[in-house]
Length: 179
Image (cartoon, rainbow, N blue to C red; front, side, top):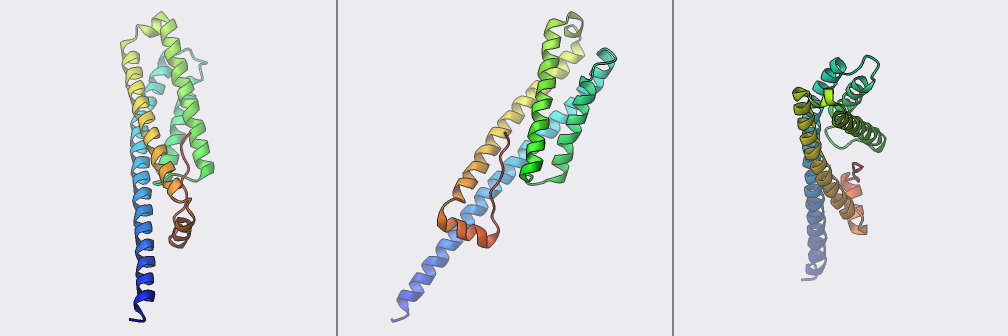
């Protein structure tokens, strides 16, 4: 009977540690799966962007840099996705977010050019390609929102003092979000 209280406390502490570990593991896995879905949406979008860059290089004036920039930025995002199965460290993620913003600028500029240029606007194949890119961008935006939500939820769970101890002991660390 004299060991009942210490054993009860030990069991309670171990139960709390296991429950905290399971919670953190589950939240990290959800963020990991959301990152994978973002990567899949991005790869699908990138395949259309590569097609678009090839198509634009043949239909835009010789000196237009959009096709080359589009291909280079698409290749940059593909490299980051190939290197990191999990969300990358902050420096790489910052580079990825910068490339994503530049890609969107080019796509938006191309869409504006299509609206104002009758010759480009009449091109059914280019219009179809831009529709695919737009749909992929919409899917990617949704995947970005979900990943950021999952990463923030996980990061918030890491902030409580007791959880920080368990996280440190088992190697859980915060995740960066996509901006």
